[in-house]
Structure formats: C-alpha cells, structure tokens
Amino acid sequence: MKYTYKGGILIYGYGNPGRQDDGLGPLATDEIQKLRLPFVDTDENYQLQIEDAIDIAKYDIVIFVDAAVEGKEPFSVRKVEPSDKITFTTHAVDPGSILAICKDTFDKEPDAWLIGIRGYGFEFDGVLTARARENWKKAVEFVTLLLLEYKERVMENAGQKTVLIIDDDADLRAAMRIVLEASGFSVGEAAEGEEGLKIAERIKPDAVIVDLMMETIDAGSKVSSALSERGFEGPIYLLSSAGDTVRLNIDAQKLGLAGIFQKPIDHKILVSTLKKQLKVH
Figure 1 (cartoon, rainbow, N blue to C red):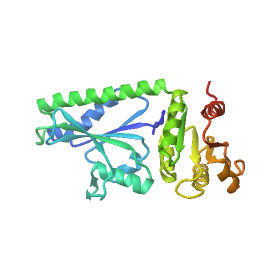
Figure 2: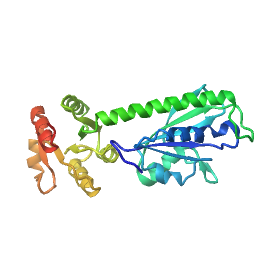
Figure 3: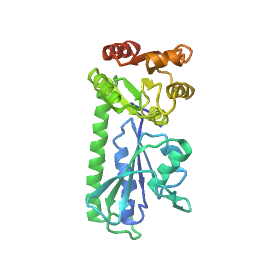
Figure 4: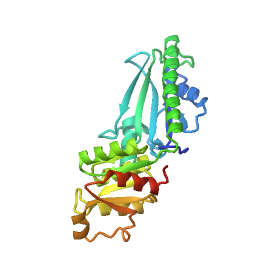
C-alpha cells in the first residue's frame, strides 16, 4: 500500500482476457500501470473475490473497471455504494458487496466508482473487437486524465494542513469552514461523534475541533478519548460554552486536549491558534 496525501488510489480491473471484450478491465489496468504514478496501485483478476476486501479497505479511492455487455458507449461511470445485502456465487462478488464487507468487517468505506467499458464480443478469443478497442482507449484516456489532475492537486496541497470540525450545528461548521479555508486550511466536517471518527480515519486531519455537547452531554470528551485511543497524535480542541466547561468541570490538560475554544467563536483566535500549533506561516 502506498500512502500519499489523503491516501492512495487503487485501480482494479476484472474480467477474462481470453474471452474477447471480457478482458477490457484487466487490459485497462495494465495500461494505467504504465503511468507509474506513485500514489496509484493496480490490481486485476478474472473476477472480484471476497478476499479482495482485505486490500481494498486500505485505500481511500477505488476505481473498478469492467466490461459492460450493454449500456452507454464508449463507457459508463457510476458511484458504487455498499450493498444492503452481500451477494456472491462461490467466491465471486460485485463491487457493492466488496464495499459492504469493507464497511462491516473493517469499518472502512473507500470512495468507489465503477467504469463499465462497452464490449460486444465475448467468445473464447484473446483479441478485442475493433469497437471495444476504441472504447477501451477512451476509457483509459478518461482515467489517466483523472489521475493526473489528482496528482496536480496532491502537489499543490502537499503543505496544506487539514482541520476536522465535529459539531451538530451546521451553521457553526459552515462559518468555521469559510474562515479556515480562507486562511489556507483544508476542512473536513462531521455532524456527530461516530461520523467524526470515521471521517478522521479517512482524511487523516492534522487537528480536530469537537463540540462538547452533541448526541450526549459529554460527546466531545468521548470523541477526544476515542481519537487518542486510535492513535491520533495531532492537537484536539474542545468547543464549548464557558458555562458548560465550568459546570461539567472540564479539564483540558487531564483530557489530553490542546485547548478549549469558547462559544461564540472568536475567529481571529481560532486561526492564530491553529496556525501557531500547526506551524503554518
């Protein structure tokens, strides 16, 4: 697994190259591998298997590539969501079932897409049909463009610090996002504790700001403890009104917090504190 800014990308092509256009997925993967992009891994097989979830769960972005018997030409693109029911024949599974296994077994949910390259012939022959080859070229060009654009964003944002805001007040989150992004930070959001923990795993923030009072009276303290238990080493700030901090006897030092931001938020203090803590100039 190759980790880069915000995690790595896996391109997974599947199908049988010995059955004409059924091999479009693996052939596309082979071509993309030639780019040798450091943040991209490739894999291929005749079919997806339940065991693939072990590796797929490690990635932030997964692009499945398969031949399509019908549908749009030259190729279709659709978002893959975890299936409600995991379905498989022997060991073969569909992408949605793979994501469901990732979510249920490993508590991971990669951002996944399926590219279906339109095929026309599926007889026992190792040569693509002429029309499918043209579709294959266009699909590879499309994926290549996406990956190169991603690479540019990685390079542009390599030094950017990410702050995760966990708060059930959407307006407060929006206001903080605007201020922080205008100050050069990347921002992630979550509306409650469990969601925040999952997003922290996904985006790997440099700092976390969590509201004290959310789904439970001390949700923020619990989230802070859970983050530390999961190995998060960045600064964690609690967001609280002065009254709640005193009433609940919140001690930032005992909780291992970097500090407490009092509501209503002073945005100048917010930005200056984070810049100093994260050494942003």
